Image (tube, rainbow, N blue to C red; front, side, top):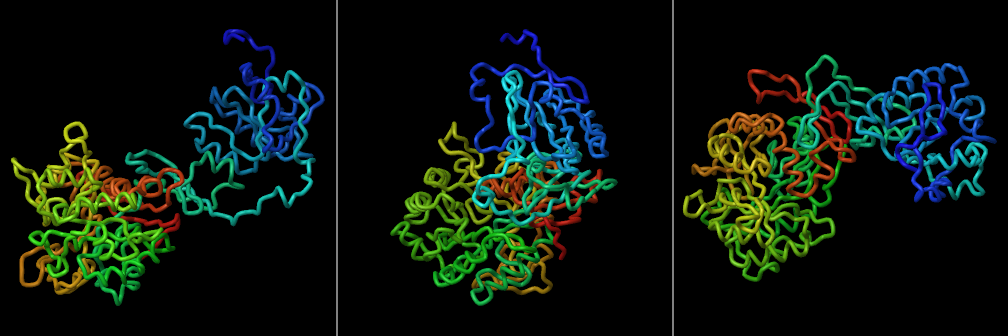
Length: 580
């Protein structure tokens, strides 16, 4: 049938007449009956007229009138919404037109119109994936197909066909707020949360048995909901050091709770260069604490910084723990122990100096065995070509750019030059890079140069140590003693060598705005979607897209005169607010 041909059958409902488009011939046979796995709808008829009349609002009950009024206000050319007339023998039903086919779904609960009104069709009609959905095609109307009501149909063995009911999951709706979603701010958005996950309101419409259990309305407040911050380099905090084997469980517990007040909802506990015995003892304990826990920031896995580092660029690492790997991967496995190859390895990131003996082969073999472990270059004397070769072997990141590495030189830019490379010019893509934006580890001008060269690769890290969040002047870092030199500067005791930092993630975010001139949203991306993508977890962290973890931060107290200004008003983990 030509698209210009008129169609002589229409479906009349209280809100007006809607003409169904013809079904393509190739689909007629397929569409003539409902899918076998879906029960038919509650439509029964002995003729075309009775079949069609089942979609009229004949019943004038309060619920029918409410639904009729709501449906009459939907003005989508591609969406037809209707309701069943029989409120005595069957439950209410609704239908809508999508892909030139009418879909009827049973039942509609009283709260569902509210879900529909929340713009669930804003992206256009969606496919029907409801267990009680049945396609009603043009052929079925013309051929007077009989459809029995599922209300009157009992399966032969109900226990065999009815799945066990899942535990109820609370539904929360956050409204009248802006949302940083997938790296971009969406104005006047609504965020839905169910079972600790961000959910698509359209899928919620089909699955939920009622509307939200809780509505968090930010009307009258200028708020921005952003993904929870992710810190992938954190040596310690609140007086605890992750390399302290005697207190590792306590360290993980105290720090994972304490970080929440700074908006950090996920982190990589970082171990500085240590004897093999430390890794053998600590890594299994970190593995046990990986994953989500109520009221805690999530432990993503360990960042092992060392001991395969260049002695001249050791920084605050104990030189007596450093080593090379002349036997390749075997030396690395002996050092870190079985946790390196465990099915759910405790190791997320390993920082190495690419010029250390045997390291290129080691990187290649490590990535071959476990693609999920990220190799980062740091504490290195590598020249540009050597660092580039490390990328070819599988490295994808640089640890605290500018610090503990060869400085940029116009004849040999060293590892810093990697952020300017491209697939076209060198055969490898630009790596991600961590940067400590505390104003001490790198001059603001250096931070600005790096950000302009590769903004999407910028990852804010605190590189915090046990002194962070604490009063006092002397603390431990692995086997070293460190001393606070100023409010934001910590050095190895008796030297001027920097030894990590004592800053917070919000402090670094604000500084990135001030140092580079980027927007607040762009700076937050460097603490959310960038680290999540760099370690391969953007499918569940850092974006606030549907099906990702409902870990997020509510910001307020912005200042038009200071684009870096914000305040952390609320922090949510698994969709539940946490209070410090």
